Image (cartoon, rainbow, N blue to C red):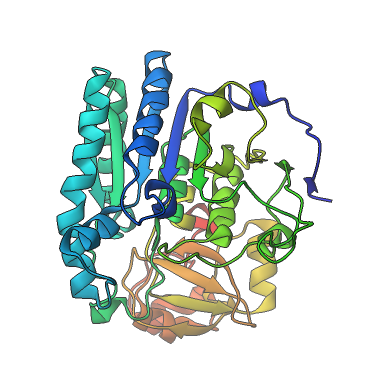
Length: 389
């Protein structure tokens, strides 16, 4: 079995012995039963995090809550429609950030606001700039507070995004991207559930918590449930986040943020939540970015022989293995690689645009010059620019 349900292989103290930590606070954790932000709870988070920073830890916060705060400030019951949601985010974000600023100022710490859209990861130059900035902020001893920039994010309203697989659409995936791309040692996801259970605890009173997960397999993912009311994530998105972070050697804890002083208890070694153990496949920063941090529009479908060559032999993708080219893309874009059953199994940086790929697909590399009157590479995608998912 890929998980242990009642005892642990890794000691808690070893698990939490980390330097760089990302905390993700969900909407339902930050608000009380009345729907308003729970100031006592968020200030308890700030207090515990301040003690970690004072002890030499580097901490990044991924926070939700801007849209909900804006909605409450306007006295609205809902946020139907993109424009209204974006307006609520604009109103709520300043209130949310003021809470973090005032809280950390009490402990003589500086909070730094960073609002991100999908393109901040999807465009590599912006992604590299973001990495540099976050590393400098941590070096300066500040606490970066990151949120999805719902006010200006245009994924839902821009036609070119209709066919796009965006790199993140909720703060669970955003926290995983930040943790994996900044080489964080530990991602702590605080939700309104105690952790991962062997069955849905809301429907099954006999459900038991899984204290330790060795590997996030399909079996584990199938234990996930959809989002609760008021949030965009859910246990399944948290498990996908854990799968990504652990693949790159990071650790993950999913725990109940409504437990009083949960952060202090976790870092005292108490047994709260579910631990996800690191796998460490040793992917380079570039291959991480290709596989998980980019927005994808273009797709290439390959035959079974090409898939085997890519997955088992780490070969380049040659035009003879391509059977279909889907959507328009340019040279240098990251595209999705599908098998004959339309399952995505890899991504890569393409050496030719979509029109050129259509012309050369199914042909030998020696024929590229004759067909196109130019030749960039023998391969559609070279093996150094391919990430197997």
